[in-house]
Amino acid sequence: MLSYPKLHIFLCPTNFVGIGNVAERIFAGKWIAGARIEDALRRTRQLNALGMSAIINHIGEDLTDKHDIADAVSTNIRLIKEIKKAKLRASVSLKLTALGLRVSRAMARKNYSRIVVEARKRGVFVWLDAETQDTIDDAISIYEGQVARGGVGITVQAYLRRSGKNLERLAKRKAVVRIVKGAYSESGKIAFVTRKDTTANYRSLMHDAFSHLKEFTIATHDSSLIKEAMLLNRSHRRKVTYAMLNGIRNGYAAELAEQGNSVAIYVPFGTRWIDYSLRRLREESHLVLMFKSLLGG
Ligand SMILES: Cc1cc2nc3c(=O)[nH]c(=O)nc-3n(C[C@H](O)[C@H](O)[C@H](O)COP(=O)(O)OP(=O)(O)OC[C@H]3O[C@@H](n4cnc5c(N)ncnc54)[C@H](O)[C@@H]3O)c2cc1C
Image 1: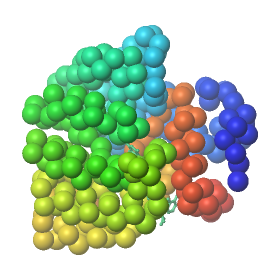
Image 2: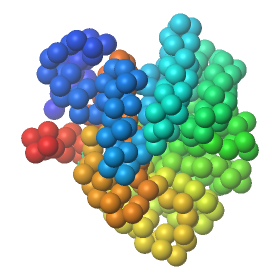
Image 3: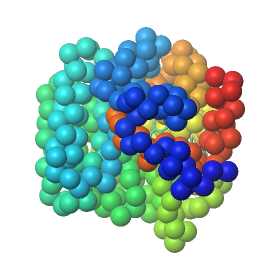
Image 4: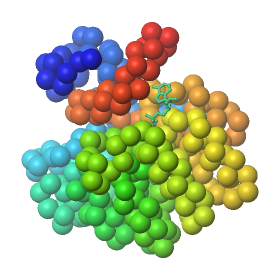
């Protein structure tokens, strides 16, 4: 298996525009729509034509340079305007650490609110990604400042032991929640570290969501969880969307959409693609499955 330092050398350029090498073709091409807003919009059009919506993410995290942060804000606002203009079925998903959380909570709150206000005017839904565990309290509190006015959702990670309590708190605020397994490396003290335990907690959160939430997204490629959610929804009749990452099991996602389910694909775009791609690689089974899917298409 590739070690991270080697991988960093392999992926060395931080901007994939014009790398034109194997890394660009494998990583950027497989998971990332491209470098520009137009690339994300093009992918969204394809998905819409297949009956699916997009959750578009301008890639970037842990930004501390004020110009980079300002660029992240203006890119997201431009994206929202383009989605509205092109009448696409798409939401946007934000990372608070791209909006200044590493500088100050106040900066992230202000930038998030600015984007949400612009999105609300245009009827574009805004998700908040879940990042490392040290950002979760801030994310919930910043989200809670906007949830009452609608049009916003937040992500809950099944691998965090505290997520059941967070979901309970969010349900009281009538939050819209996206449940994921969790993509970062967290310690066993605060997180479930095996896939089996994480999946068991996912299942538990999913049952809680069916009991207490009206609208939520089951974001996973795990067919057993998806099948169980579909079964539960026969009796609960909630507004459930099934979501997958761009380039992973998208054929299966299209089948679910064809069967009449609400399906969304998370579409990242932008030039800061290395961290995102490394997280996809770290997911052990994804690594094996990725090479299979690269070979098999
Ligand atoms: C829409 C969406 C949004 C996300 N947002 C966030 C976020 O904000 N924060 C965060 O921390 N994480 C996020 N994630 C990532 C998530 O946390 C997981 O890292 C990622 O989804 C992998 O977990 P899994 O649920 O697919 O389950 P896994 O346990 O990785 O996989 C379960 C099963 O799915 C199938 N499978 C998985 N990958 C493949 C493949 N490539 N080909 C074929 N079958 C496959 C296999 O059967 C596998 O056994 C998001 C994921 C999605 C889908």
